[in-house]
Image 1: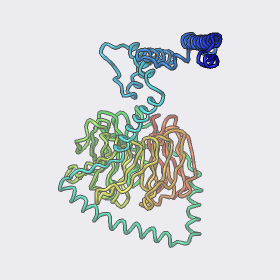
Image 2: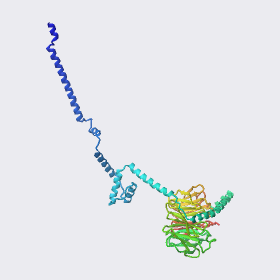
Image 3: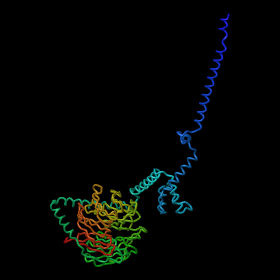
Image 4: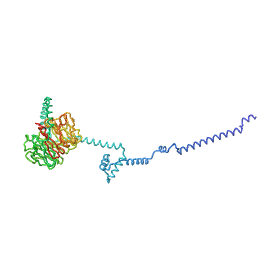
Length: 511
């Protein structure tokens, strides 16, 4: 019986020990949990030295207004470092290049300068470069389009008649020219070379033969008569004078222009078979007037109208003598029928003024020199531009055909003289001719064995063909040389200058 009670009733000591252990264990767990919670709370709220505050700021994105404020501070900092020109003209130019209005209502130079500074500070370097590059590309594209465009207009019925007449006139002359070249090539090379070397030897002995004061104002242009016995000279006084060759005695003063006379040109048959009482000379002036002269009167016998108020820089007779070409500063050149004194061709094609004009010896081609730094060769029989002379960097002031019919010389403000080949349609040679702009280029008028160039550096030079090395150079004028010409027989070279003098040069013993 006692044995059964010991198994059914637990002792008091054992029960008390178990309850105490459980109580202690639960307290320890509660203390541990409380400590962990306390530590976790403090770690989340109190930053330590190893955890800087910036980490917390980076985790939280900035507000839009804060970001805008920082951007404004950065822009102002950049603006203070930008140096803007104090020249108002340059400021306007920079605004225009950035495609911004150059002036706002009530805005002065200081405000405009500050606006440009703020504008630049808002743009990145890439955006500024992109705007400038886009502007330059657009300007270049527009300029190229203008320069390369060739304008053709519907002409009158007289133009078709004139083209047909020029074709009939030029084809036989072209055939004769080609035959002369074939005959020349058939000559043994030894004889040809010896003849040319003798010519060059005489040219190296060129000397001043005569000098004369031509007018009270600077002289512009000179040209020998077809018989080489007279020289026509135009001047800034508006007067055109005829002088004897080679002693430079005045023959006649042609009074008709009231402003600077740019050019005077002889009819191809004047002093040969042309009647002295009809048209023998043509002249032009700054006011666009073109006057026609005979050899019996000091007054013009006719006037060609239609150019005013634009300057007519050059007048040239067609080799046939029936037509007159004029180079005008309205970006065009024109062809006039002297039988009727009507304009049969008004040809555009240059983006700037046309300064010079020349006809091929056959009469089938015309070449024009423009202030746009380009030249063009035109077929008078079809009206097409058959060659584009691209290579000069500055305006072309003079152009001339060689007697061989396929070489062209141009002189420009870039101090270069260029030789062009029509057969290959390209620039054949470039001559660094002078120290200043080349005002006139002229081929030898019979065979084209040498070339004469004059310049604003006061020098006249002779160049041999085809190597284009210098044969002769002289500084005979005190000021810039405006024009030069070679007589048909090759005995004389004439130059006129801004120093108001005309000079006659003579190669040694050329017959």
